[in-house]
Amino acid sequence: MPLVLGIETSCDETGVGVVRDRVLLADEVASSVEEHARFGGVVPEVASRAHLEAMVPTVDRALAAAGVTLADLDAIAVTSGPGLAGALLVGVAAAKAYALALDLPLYGVNHLAAHVAVDVLEHGPLPEPAIALLVSGGHSSLLLVKDVTRTMTPLGQTLDDAAGEAFDKVARLLGLGFPGGPVVDRTAQLGDRRAIAFPRSMLADPSYDVSFSGLKTAVARWVEKQDGPIPVADVCASFQEAVVDVLTAKAVRACRDVGVGHLLIGGGVAANSRLRALAQERCDAAGIVLRVPRPGLCTDNGAMVAALGDRLLDAGIAASALDLPADSSMPVERVVC
Amino acid sequence: MLALVLDTSTPAVSAGLVCGGELLAEHVVVDGRRHGELLAVGIREVLKAGTPDTVVVGVGPGPFTGLRVGIVSAAAFGSARGLPVLGVCSLDGLAGPSTAVVTDARRKEVYWAVYDETGARVDGPHVTSVSEAQQAISGRRIVGDGAQLYGFSTADEPRYPSVLALALAAQRYAPLPLTPLYLRRPDAVEPGATKKVTA
Ligand SMILES: [Zn+2]
Image (cartoon, rainbow over all chains, first blue to last red; front, side, top):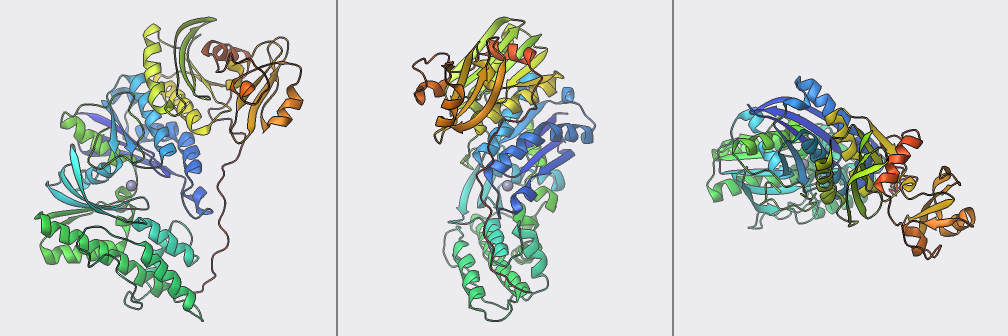
């Protein structure tokens, strides 16, 4: 049974996972998020420095946690894009060196496909075709997944800010710190999501695209106009509702339009409790099976890369060439570079 | 010592295999934007000449993005094969007796180091303005890609570190940690205060 090591460095998490035949053996993450907090967002140079420091120790930790050695591995998989160019480069270079030193096949994989593939570790094979909604600080994409080992088709994406970015910006506006997703989610639980009618950009638009920059501006204007204390919990709850309303409505509509019965949600924003609840409600009403990995597998991690590598090996997909580039704008149609 | 030697501190993407003072194989491509694509191919090529027992890597100074490719490759390769990985100052790969090495640090600054008559580094590496470097290194033979670029010298060879010289530097100096010689801090700026709100 093949044993695959997965390396992920597309943003601020150095992730290393070990998967054997759809079973997760280890998932180690070294995050530089605290180093970015004082800048209010991910600083690419700071992320790249942290990846370099964390790379080999995180691989060693993952192997130890899995109870295997490098000599046991059958393949190396690494995120080759999309993501921050300098950050991707560290993981790709490390993966190549491991593959060379150990004489193993190397898969340079698409980060978004890895977000889809990780669900196999929890819920078994994904019935394809399916729709995937991937939402994080770096991406907001609605995809048609025909075969995650071969290609995915983009249906819609954000026209401006990623969903997670909108959470970060609103959190910053309210002085709640970085990253914004978890703190807005927690604060929103104390508020009324119907308190303020923030706009649902693109909701009525027939495309599957979304847009969050107008919403962020609307929140800023609303906050500025207040004379007294700001009802932060109500602002968080109402803002969050506007985001997840649009995302879930579009995702469910895509399932209906395309005629598929499974919706998968991934990415860091998939950890949002209201997104999960509303998606469940709407999928139940529409007769769609909703699949959301546990929060630890939704955020960026190495397990998702290993999970995809495992499936690629299983499907007999050809390995990548040794000169594979880190491609910061790798298209979703391409699963392996 | 049979050393796999890597350096990505300049536009030259270099891999070599060095035994004692002898160069067994070398793979150098000058393309400053493709370190990540080219280095592994170079390693694969030079490994055909032998099996290393040590990894030597130039840790700069130089542009950070490229530098990290070499360092993480060395660290991962060494870890995978269970080999010691020795960091060396990349400027030492250009050094000779009574020379100063000057390389381009962009933004009208240079990286530089000074070597005595035995070829030992006695000052540097530093990053400074061109004029500060000029004062510190005057009267010496000047090499490196910053030499011609900033009018220190008309000599344009050697421009890039040699893997043989880097292997020798690994024997001459205590190993450096596997972290780029950044010499500069990241450019990120902390944001100003945000609007104060109360719950
Ligand atoms: Zn992601």
